[in-house]
Structure formats: C-alpha cells, structure tokens
Amino acid sequence: MLRISVLGSGSGGNSAVVFTNETRLLIDAGLSSRQLNRRLEAVGVEPESLDGILITHEHGDHVRGLDVFCRVVKAPLYCNASTREVMVTGPLREPKSWRIVSTGGKFMIGDIEVQTFPVAHDATEPMGFTLRDAESGIGVLSDVGYVTNIMRNHMRGLNTLFIEANYDGVLLQNDTKRPWSVKQRILSRHGHLSNDQTASLLGDIADDNLHRVILGHLSQDCNEPQCAVDTVKQALRTRGRDHISVICAGQSEPTPCVPAVRGWTPGAGMARPAGMARPADLASSPPLETSDGMTGPEMATATTTTTTTTTTTTMAEPSPSRLAYEQAELF
Ligand SMILES: [Zn+2]
Ligand SMILES: [Zn+2]
Image 1 (cartoon, rainbow, N blue to C red):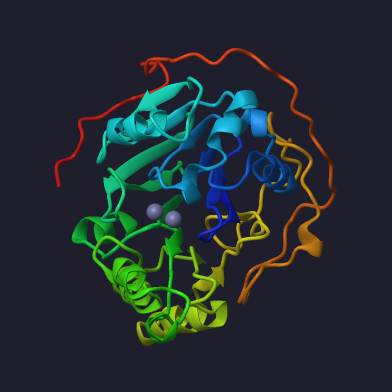
Image 2: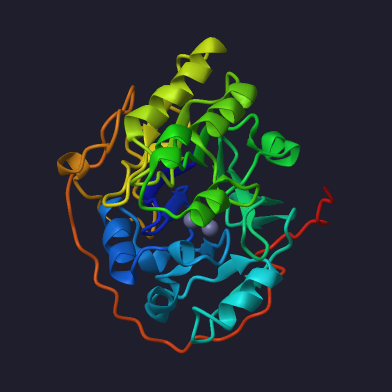
C-alpha cells in the first residue's frame, strides 16, 4: 500500500514523500535541507533510505533544498533532460546522481511504478506524476496553468490525489500586494490552478476509487484553506462523492502520513521495513486544515536520526536493472 505525507506546500517550498514497505520516494525538495530531514524523520522515513527524488520542475520552491540535501542523501534524482539541464546551470552546484526520464514515460523504482505526464506551467518542461503499487495509486499534480485531457486521464482511477489549489479568484483580484503583471501570470495558462479549476477537475474525475484529496500550493494571501476545501467538497457533493476526504497541506508542518486507501491498516504484527525510522508523534502537529475523516497519525513515538555519511557524488547513467523504461507516450 502506498502512503503519503506532504512535508510542506506553498510558495515557501514544496515537498512530499510517497512510500511502500519497500520503496521510499521524495517528490520535489523545495524546503531547506534541514526541514526536509526534520520532516522526513517526523513522518517516519529515514532520509538516507530514500530510493529516489522525483522533480516536477526547476522552480526554486520545488528544488531549493536539493543541493544541500543531496550532499548527504545519495538518492538519485529523476527528472527529464531539459529540467536537468537548467538545474545544473542554476541551483545545483555539485554533481548529482541523475536518472533522466522522458515526459510521458513510465518506469519502476523498487515496487512503485511511476508515470510522468506533461503539464502547462512556466517552467522548462514541467511534469506531473502518478505512482502505483500492486494495491493503490496516488496522483501528484501541482503548478499547472490549466487542465488538459492528458492530465484528466492520468488523474482518473487513483485512490489519493495531491493536487494544487493555488488561489481563490476573488481574493486574487482583490489582492493589493501583487502587481497586475504577477496576477496575470498566476491566472495565465502557464500559471496556477484556482480553487474553482481544481474543483471542476475533481468533479470530472472523482470515482469510487478516490478516497482522499490533499490540496496544496495554497497562496497565503489569495486563498483560505477552508475556502479551498469548501469549493472542492461542493463540487464533489454535486457528483455524489461525499465520501472523499479533503484536506489542505500547509507550509509549516507535514500532513499526517496516510495510506492511499482510506481505512486501510497494516496487518497485525507487520515488521517495520528497513529504512523506516520509528515514527514521530504528530499529535502535536494536527492536520493543518479541515480533516473531514482524516484519522490522526497511526504512529506514536518520536525519534531522531542523524545522517553522517559523506561520500563523493557521481554522475550515473540509468541502471537497466532498476529501471524498466517504456516507450514514451506521445500526447
Ligand atoms: Zn512552479
Ligand atoms: Zn511552485
């Protein structure tokens, strides 16, 4: 079963972790390295046990912590060639271990199948992801100017969606801090999704498989978590999908670690897999917004893991034994 925690989301930095008993993947690294380490440990994942870091696009709020984080954590970076090219000439000063994937391609990391797909945003070649194991599926869609049929198709049939709801249209129009040009960028077809756009997408694709929606990348000035949740829930309600849990990820604390399928619990006596730290007590960090069916963290005791390894980073070619690349789909 896939599990997810959004470690932080918003213009101040974005990162999430998705994992099974066998495989642990970080998606984006826009928080500081210190915060990435702290929050991974808080949700029970040892940073050094990561099997890969997936990069959606090169904007600072998605890769800011990568350079420092990867000095100790040697997990390979998965991104497309264009994104790598712009990152090595910008935010990444040191060599890294890269796995170059195609936009629209599908590959395996451990027991997680990753599908990438193109999104519309003002970055070099931004991507969305779906992640699947034998039992469940999670979709990740953030930093998107408008919704395409490709996105709609990829987001269908999954159990949990982590999806952007950046702004409320009225709050953005009334905002006095942002100049007109910035508002135009946000509203453009290469900007961000509004609550209404996200609600419309979710209303279109919600089905019996969908259990959870985690809304992310909320603007601090031009959105309100309750407003975003209400807008989405209203769209789901009109389609008879009241059962779907909707919460907002926030900037300052991770969301509780939850299984992709609501109500699922690990079998009694299941051993803690290698690489899983003793999980932290998140009771002091409750879900940031309306939980609506969200159970608290199942994990109870805090611990700290210290990372000390300092090996030399190397450039690496994709390993055929680890990656089962498939022909890129043409959309
Ligand atoms: Zn962006
Ligand atoms: Zn962003």
